[in-house]
Image (tube, rainbow, N blue to C red; front, top):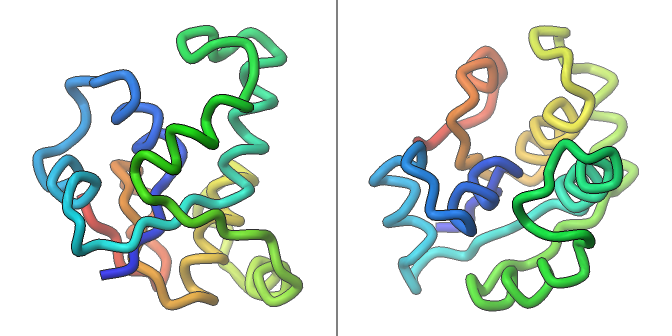
Length: 128
């Protein structure tokens, strides 16, 4: 199964956070799943590191590329079609990064691995 991994899901996995669900751990560790990580999430992490809101993972997103490789993650770029999808989304979620992740999941027909309950208000499959 090809799965889009939400930002917090990846961070929780890296930090061995107790909030990571058993299902999420299973999906992240299985060799049968194709994990996708969005450029949007790297952008979000870079901003949070720079503003001091995310000190637990270091001072740069540069090392995350190696962590993504360890999980076998594919990097999903931001495409024009994602932005078009974003325009048509109802405004259930205020976070611009999450809204773009939702648009990407919808456009690419990907389930998204997230604990964020607001994602369920959209026409995307949520796994947690």
